[in-house]
Length: 116
Length: 116
Image (cartoon, rainbow over all chains, first blue to last red; front, side, top):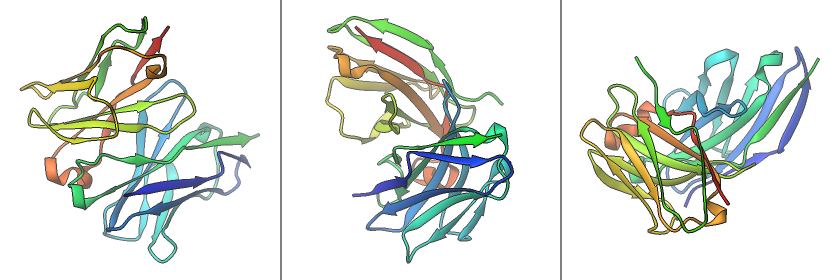
């Protein structure tokens, strides 16, 4: 079975400060990992994904994440927060054992608040 | 290139009724999956269809059923609606069946279902 834990249901940072959103996963097989962003009353937009290539993954809007197998983590970072980054962020995991047919398992989400 | 479109955007139903939600996949995608997102929670995988057949299912009862059509559009049907079925229902499309994880998923904006 696979699972995702997102530490911190709410994270508040000042505009221009570093953004760090934490994600730890549990999987018995090599995982595929994703970060999605959701704006109010909208669907999910893919920020980036890890598919067993480079461990440091760069995504859209200046976000990046590093896969650390020893720590079972896939934390999302952005060097400088912008007001438009305020949204809900979801980490998700899937595995190759089901060929993707097991779907994505999502964390409960982290609400990112940007202080002016 | 069009994205994933879902209809209707909002729906109110009475407990015990049946509902059908619709999804048009992104052009070129042959795999579609459905997710239920309760308020304040991460999305939960309902099921996935590949080439018109269900090839994966989450922990949802049989009253949740679906169809995928030859043009890869899809329907989610829910019978005997319960109050707890109130949620945002998200459709996601991708390409590749067994290789879906390498392509990631494109999500629609969802259908907000309210059961009263």
